[in-house]
Length: 291
Figure 1 (cartoon, rainbow, N blue to C red):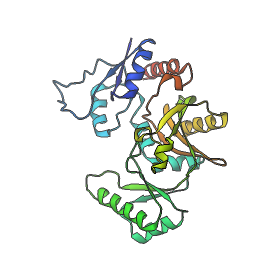
Figure 2: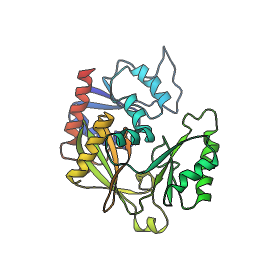
Figure 3: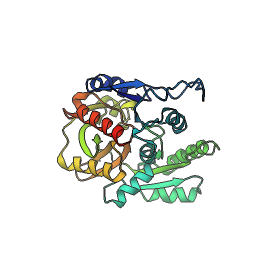
């Protein structure tokens, strides 16, 4: 049986453990953060106990230590996670590949207030402001007027002014108020399932607008149209990432690739293609064989 190292013990680990075990792959939780880790003799991670890693840890410094200790290939390695984490970099690559992305401006702090005003005025308000490398909707805000926009930028500037902050950038983007939000899963270049992320009527009436599941949205399995599948597959091919969550915003007349995630949460099996776990097990086995 192949031994798979999984860094995070959250929904994905619990959902994948039994289906992968049925296919000859034992998922093992290998914690890498929020703990004391001896180096050298007495290390808490047994380098010889695992054959392959699932996805590289999201906290890259801890991931570097775990990677050195495990010394295994990853289904999604450091390059995949770092590429997907850089939202502006992803949008630039996709735009150059001819894929549809939101109108966006990248801001690297510090910048003059006049430059920020120019950025705001190129959009029809409201605008979306989001840190360039956070996940789960953390730090994402919507500004309906110039003063609010500048205030949000001030707060980001204060946080990013701290010398230990590695990412001092953010995005300003157009807002699509009536878009349907899809998370599409692509594995080794092929569509394997999708969910629609939706807020309840009550949440929308209360002013919520973010569709992240971790912010209260629900994810329902959907059968995606062929044209949307092709777009998601093209995103994964362009970024060269084996396991990728692709976020699509769809309106009556537009389809936009909003973000990607190389550490996607795996949802309930009923929300994916029937052979999803067969294909995932095959991908893990191929990664071991190619190492």
